[in-house]
Length: 269
Image 1 (cartoon, rainbow, N blue to C red):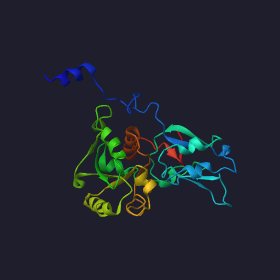
Image 2: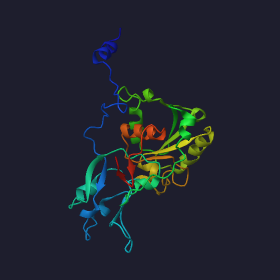
Image 3: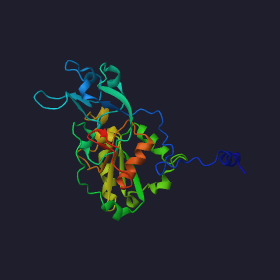
Image 4: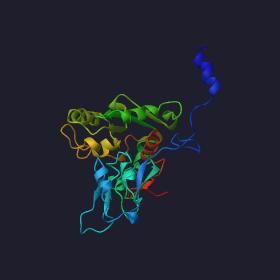
C-alpha cells in the first residue's frame, strides 16, 4: 500500500461540514471588504478617494443628499488602503467576505436597506436543476488569482462535489457560466460563443471584481468593464480574489440553498 494512503488514514477525514453545520469555513482571521461609517466622515477629507486605485470610492456630487462618499463594492479590490489612510475611522477593516448578490445595486452602499427585489431565479432554479449544478468556467483575461481560489474548491477541505456542484469542460453540459477577468477584447467572442453553446435554461455568475466591473484594468486599451454590456449576470461576487467560502455561498445562493446576506452594500444578517 502506498505511503500516502497510510498518511491519509492517519489524518482522518479532512473535509469540513460547513456550510451544512457549524464547521470551519477556512476563513478564520481573514479580512474582507472595508466597512463604511458615514457619521465619522469629515467634510474636509478625501484621502480615501485619492488612495482608491480602482475608483470604488468617490465623492458624491454637491447638491445630492446622503453621505459624502459613494462606495461601490463591485469595484473594490479589498486592498484596504482606504482604511489605512482614513484617520477618523470612517472606513474600517472587516471580515465581510461574503458579498455575493443577485442585483448589481446591492454592491453599492446605501443609507436605507430595502427589501430584495423580485428575482427570476426564485422557483425557476429549483425546477431546472434541483440540488445539482454543472459549471463551465471561462477565464476572460484574469490574472489567475480567481482561478487559484476556484481550484481550492475541489481540494479535500472544501470538496465542492459533496454539495452537488461540478465543473464541466463542455458548455453543452453546463447550467452556469462562471466568468472571471475583465473580459479582454480577444476573449469577448470566445465568451459569447461559450454562452451560445449552453442549453436553456442557463445562468451567469460574475466572479471577482474584474468580472463585476472591470476592476483596476476596466476600460483600458485591452478590455471592457467586466460583463457589463456583454452578458447579463444573475449573481455578482466581487473580491480580488473572492475566497473559496465566498464562492460556495454564492453558488448556494444561486441554487436558493443559502440566503443573500448583503443588501445595500452591507451584511444584514
